[in-house]
Image (cartoon, rainbow, N blue to C red):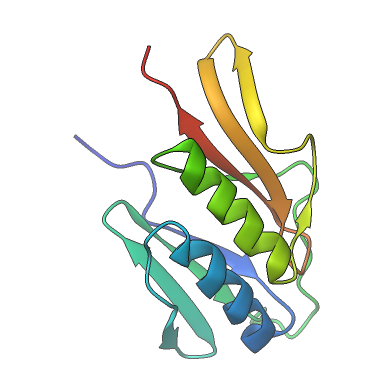
Length: 129
């Protein structure tokens, strides 16, 4: 079976401040701290890699308006831990508060946050059907 993604790279303006944010939120998922690369950090799991980088073109990093990066969580508690770590480390809550949502794709527990540069993440725990 093929995977859809190899990695996602997120532009940041303050690499070390963003590393503190990402180290904290990914620790809530059981992922280790960022691994240094050339002017970037990588967060690796068995299912993919997320990198943070200051833009190579030297311009300011900006978030994608309408874009969201969804992260798979293993429980409601993991979603809540992710959200708490994000807010405690420079992130902001967006959308509705963390909680249960039901819709055409089933029952899910979600939390939306923006990183210090405004990139939006959704922590998702899907209940078994």
